[in-house]
Length: 142
Image (cartoon, rainbow, N blue to C red; front, side, top):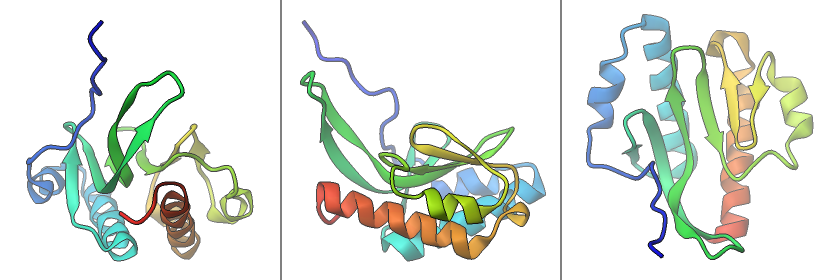
């Protein structure tokens, strides 16, 4: 039986070209601001993952089922509806920060924001730093 491959993998596509290609000026501004924040937090250069995710750092995972792969440590995607911030593998210990963030929705390992103007950027940065440190604890230094 062949192993399933991840649909979302790192590519050599230009992050700058991707961000510059965002048509909505507010979304473009927000995406560039998030990119600067994540670069500062991670100390890593941005990489495109799939056609629309900007990631910083990577990690190797292996599930109990035996499936294994590689994925970004932290990243974001400027989707049509929301700015999606990927703080992996989840938000188990971040409840206090999330309460202070401002309007958002969350998924298992992602945070949905309408606009950065709506949230407390200092809290968002603390949340992203906490996510990065959590990944280092779980998977070692990037």
